[in-house]
Length: 304
Image 1 (cartoon, rainbow, N blue to C red):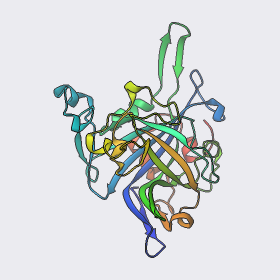
Image 2 (cartoon, rainbow, N blue to C red):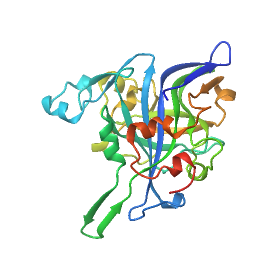
Image 3 (cartoon, one colour):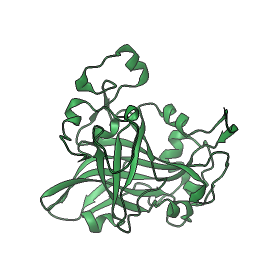
Image 4 (cartoon, rainbow, N blue to C red):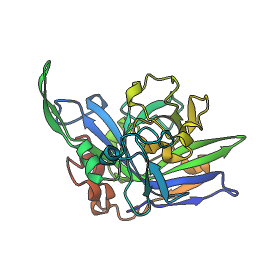
């Protein structure tokens, strides 16, 4: 149903919207488990960000594989994978993100930051569908293994924004869920800290510096183009400004709990386009990726 809209409830506004779009949450049961019945049964938690508008309609991302083959040695100013421009108002741009702790930080209380990374950036819906599907495979030590398909567990709208509080600017990732509806149960969402709405500070990790978390090994870290890498200087972390940082595979970041009441914290109200209908046919997640696994977690708020 689209990116929704936002309403500033303070004058003057304390925030500047950098990016608007849709956000989808998924979890995958542990290997050889067909279903999950608690967070102990979860192997991975994923977030998919689909930007649809922002301060600029064009974002720069790393090139996709077939394009890289045509240009094996991109200039260092373009990053380690070359660069590609995407008009997010006309074309799909999908960021497939892995949360390291298999949950979000609890936005209702102060807690340690949680680490995540961008595993895939693509303009092709099929690439994300492939990343979500299950598979059968064999290993030398454990024999035959079964990996179940990822389950959709939340859908909503999001914003990445600058927040000016005092002298220092920082960036937030905020979202509001559209599915499941408030009338449904909330079992997997509660276990994974997927609240109905939430605000997190988001900080991008400098791939050339050691962080407070172990993170990805050096070969898997993002190689940012010069104009993005230069913003770090000698700092270990930088605000997600611009959000283009997230358009590079291997980009590592921290999410830090801020609030479960966006309007109270930031003076911004997110308005969904499906608040009154709440019909499954309105789900952009299902219309985009199809029903590759049970939708009970998304539509009914129960473990599957």
